[in-house]
Image 1 (cartoon, rainbow, N blue to C red):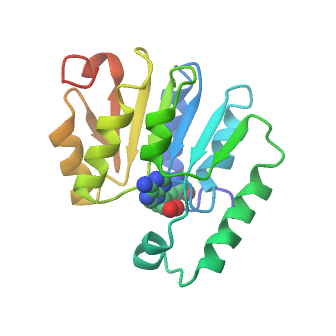
Image 2 (image 1 turned 90 degrees about the horizontal axis):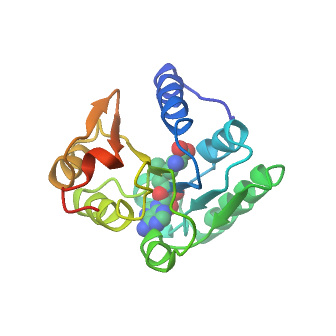
Length: 181
Ligand SMILES: C[S@@+](CC[C@H](N)C(=O)[O-])C[C@H]1O[C@@H](n2cnc3c(N)ncnc32)[C@H](O)[C@@H]1O
């Protein structure tokens, strides 16, 4: 269950692992769901703080992830807490990524994984909020850019990014000057 389930996911994990290993400092995951990627990151980067952010909003899960009731959200949250329990470097933040980003005062993250909204305006607002928080030497990755609204949001918001197999890769140094620094 907590292993990459498809060849594409494995390929994406290989890319993300290589990119994130070139950075230092906290790792932020925006959008957790069952914590599949959270646990994978925790295993790969046991010495780096990982903040995994998700309020588990019922409306999102009803629309996109096949859940029907609040009890499902509580079950997912409890499952994720249990999954990350062996990894003391992981903090689960049950909060909207916007409010968390506005109050984030920790060390600049070296890596951010964007995997929350999959709507154009939602992804744009996530990038606008979190990219300036990313370390000057950091790397961010946006997931699911095979979905058109996600890819459009990247094109609208960023420069210097590139797409690889359903991922948008953003090197913070490259993006400086695009109104994001
Ligand atoms: C595609 S799932 C994340 C999958 C996970 N990253 C993985 O790799 O297994 C998207 C998640 O984003 C979360 N989400 C949606 N809007 C959010 C927001 N405003 N802040 C934080 N998380 C949000 C949803 O609750 C959902 O669990």
